[in-house]
Length: 126
Image (cartoon, rainbow, N blue to C red; front, side):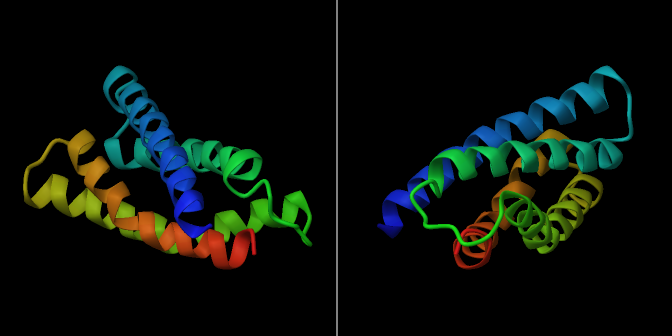
């Protein structure tokens, strides 16, 4: 059922936000890496986390015709638009609205959630 799957996808996404924020904080605040560069790395760590959780939980009941590695590649490709939107939003809110990058990051992540769900549902785990 779509609503149960979306709920599971949302739980995975919430865990991904925590992973993303934690890695971003550690890289930017603790290690002093520029926040946009740190955001690239935190995005990738969260992306891999979300892929594995979605693979093993959200979409586990799908009769999958593609290989694990193909789904992993599709997942990365499907996130290109979300990644671009996240980075642009993070930059604009942080630099032009003078909002702390950790708050901007949460807002930026929220913008890509629906796109990410539909690309996952319709293409990665179809």
